[in-house]
Amino acid sequence: MQGEVVYLYAFDVANEVDTTRVREILANKPVPFEIRIDRTVPKDVPLYKPLAIEPPPLESCFAGRAARLLVRVYDIGVVSIMMRVAFEAENLRELLPYHKPALRDGRTFDQVARDLCTQTCQSLQDVMIRSAPPSEPEAYTVFCLTEIGATRDADAWLAAQGRAVAELLTESEAGTLSEAQVSEVLRIRRSFEKTDAVVIDWDAALAIDLTGYVDDVLYVLELANLQLEEYRVMDQRLDGYLNRAYDDVKRRRFGMFGAYSKTLRALRLFRVDVTRLNDEVTHISKLFGDWHLARVYLGARERFYLDHWRNSVEDRLSRVDELYNVVNSDVANQRVLWLEITVVVFFAIELYAVLVLKR
Picture 1 (cartoon, rainbow, N blue to C red):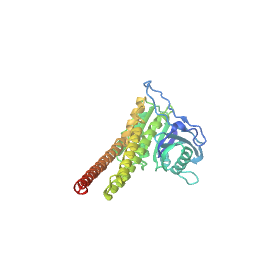
Picture 2 (picture 1 turned 30 degrees about the vertical axis):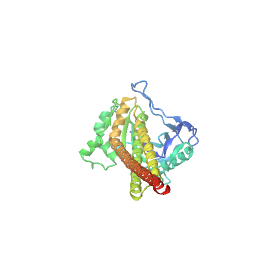
Picture 3 (picture 1 turned 90 degrees about the horizontal axis):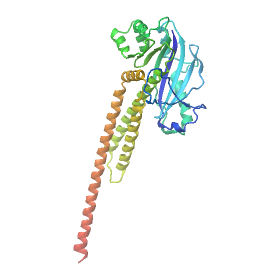
């Protein structure tokens, strides 16, 4: 067998990156990333194109092989790092060590990806809007096979190697998985021709394309992976913000023009930011002109539970709306009360002037 293992890392680094102003990334001129579409597609369906560069490879990094590095910058505030290591193996068991790759100096691929992301952010700091330290990355591993021996039928090969594929993707010892678990791992499977197939699991995937081109499938999995990262980050931020907001509202008593106005303004701005980001993250993969790639994406979306994450974010956004309405109603009641007090005071002054001063 021949192919490569691809490691995907998605980092949330800002609310937004103004990619139209990016001229250079890590001393390289970025270009819009494009994939080759071999199958029949609608002519007018656009495909999202992040900015991409390819830094120099890491020499002799793992198993005596150099690792190709690719960096992609998305305008939704995400930096994606891809590391690709070629391999030759007699069987799938030999690929298990690739789940935990490391350099000769002891650094893991996770550390290398985080360092490369930090350097990328430093070169983009002038075009990043509301930047933040890189988040804990969402990592994903894809085992890509371009040669599987004499056979040219990926479906037949998968039927014979199903258990070995499940053990590889779940990083399990030989013979330990139940038949039910093997079936679950292989459940989300997509194929267009006999020479290609994709099996998508939670932490890793297997992509077979005997024509040698897997970049289209990798791009779809990268988009799904970064969506998972963005939903996870949004969910955490909403949790933290709501907890602080609830405590703030319970602890304080606000006046007519005091801290309540600041709370309202903060809630409104936060609601707008998260709603916009949620829409952009959701729509980044809305238009896949290639129906096969669309099916691959739907499979990844199901496996990554993206709909559950999005529903969780939208549920918390509805709570922000409820809190905003509560605070806004309280502010309105406070203002009505103060206006009524003001009217009574002026009436009392006028009455005093009529009854006392005129005497």
